Image (tube, rainbow, N blue to C red; front, side):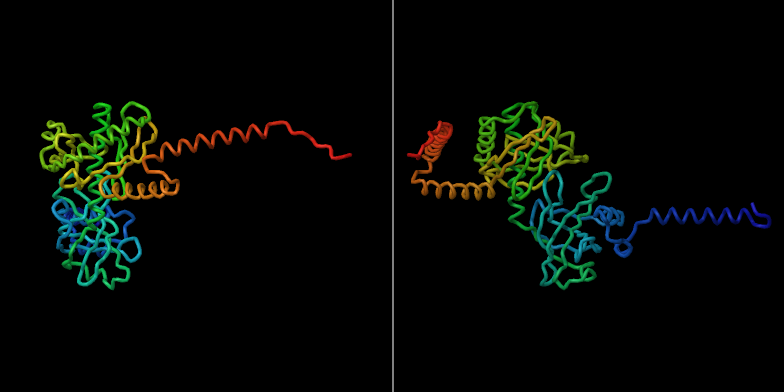
Length: 369
């Protein structure tokens, strides 16, 4: 204490300042303030958390549509050159989760279509789906659109439908392969990860065994294709987690679930908890083609496959190449395997004869008379 100073008055001022600090930290931060004070973040989640705290919320409509009008709630410069982050009130863009990659597409404002380069969903700690903000990173390069013009603007969101369709085909096919593996090897099969994109799918699993045999691969592939050919419509329901588990719904590896979950059913073949995008009818994933299987350590196997449009394109390309080869060898396509085996046998015989000749003793000639 300092002599001559009103200690009581000083204590009162300090208490008042502490109270104001607590009020300021508890008060919502406006989106405009966030945008002005936010420097390009190293992680988009930093910006998303700030926008979420400011009260911004996005309604996801990607299950129902791939095109939606929206309002830009807030903007901020992105770390990437000539890019900006936008928070939307409504968004059809799927953000990467559950092994499925994000959607791509465009944000249309006036006559400009801004490419969507990245989609991020930031949810509240409680995990409630209604408390989440979906933010998209758009490329402003050569568009002539300034970030300031986007703040509060009415825009049209368009998902790239071809990519979405092929990704959905692969996601549904992943569920079928999971079920097919369990049908082949039993309930000991557990998912250990996945990656689903428009190009292909990857499914990691454990089942207590080693490499899959050719018969195993054929059986799993055939099981998935039989289900695909039934053409059954997929069903999706939102229900309490406990109710979904009671119905035998399988949870995905590494996923965290809230009180309410989305259940995806493929007839009697598969029931899983899943927030990803899927086809309307299972026939859309036909055909399912397994490309490879490998071990990735710790008793975990990996299957890579294609389905639907990607598989049809692959099979058409492979058949065209096979047909050209058959024409060059003057054989039918169905006769190629036997013809190639015959060529291999002849090559093996000729190689053996050449080696025998190279080992035979040579006779020296004496040309002197």
